[in-house]
Length: 158
Image: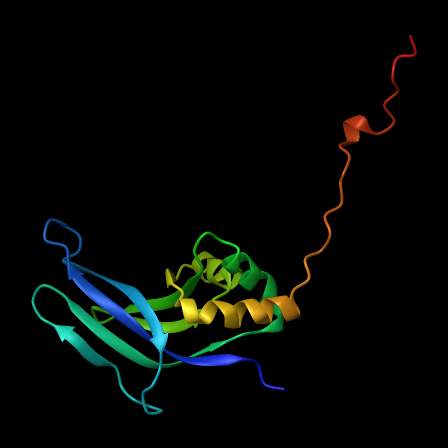
């Protein structure tokens, strides 16, 4: 049985940084949306002018994996669920490379030194992810561990 997945596209935005001596602009993902493009469609400009630009990058697959269920659970139970976008700076442009809804996978990517930014998860995707987590994630019961200082302690018999 194939893993559940969604076809998605990433919207990247460029904004100028006029008072920054190290960089003249910044790129960041601002949204992840359902992908309705033809397979193999190239990125395209949505807005392109001197003040800012927005580019649509189609062709991503948001796939759910059983071994990431805890990361999906952590994302869903956060105050605001996110889609995490792993992206690179290529030739002065922000180019997305992967998307995930797992907190754990996003953390591993950050630990590897890549750009990972979260964008709000579209509300229509939350029940889809919640159903997957409900079927595939069972939290391990927490055991109470007694500190070594309490083991073998004897009370005063007064």
